[in-house]
Image (tube, rainbow, N blue to C red; front, side, top):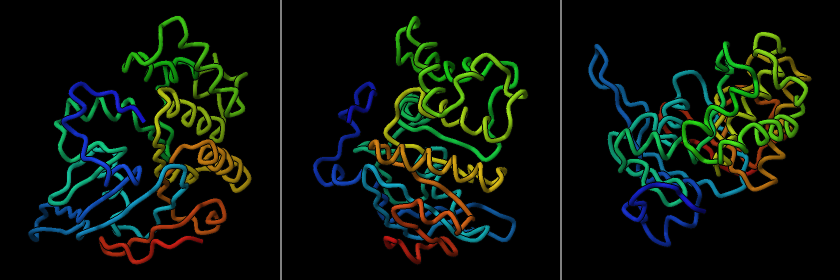
Length: 245
């Protein structure tokens, strides 16, 4: 799997890290709060292999969002190591992280976060423009192909406000796939969808895992567990269960 970074060998860590697409080693994260230090994660070890569809579950404040932020490089650990596809995420500066994340991680949010003044197709082309991953003349064609993949090709030239919630989330999934990243991270992606639409979106994620993408999803919805390879359960910043179904 090709991590497109300048001086990428700087971040290679050898055969051991190649065994897993994601590997966390002794990761802790504390935040400064009025009462002192708040430990959001405590010495977390975790591995996720390519092609897994993994749920990250736990109560509010359990550390789910912090864990995702460590993996995507949005935040950095207080201690420990984070590897994604043999890249030492914890060892990069912000500029390097932005390049790496744009090309290697697709992130999907609960509230879609599509740019309202761009058409759906333009929203999907934008990551390609930022990362220059495909020739300019091929970008719209790729956007339309991705929209067809998620079942809303006919919405390509509409604004996000013209789409239903389920259609907007499908567009957000297409945008996350724009640069063909090996890792898809979804933060409560069905939280604003009805049950029927949630099932359709979950099936899209399951299909991506079958195609070889690694999908990591934060969710509160335990009735969706049938879609996952396994669940990682967090409590007070500690993994209490990471077993298969």
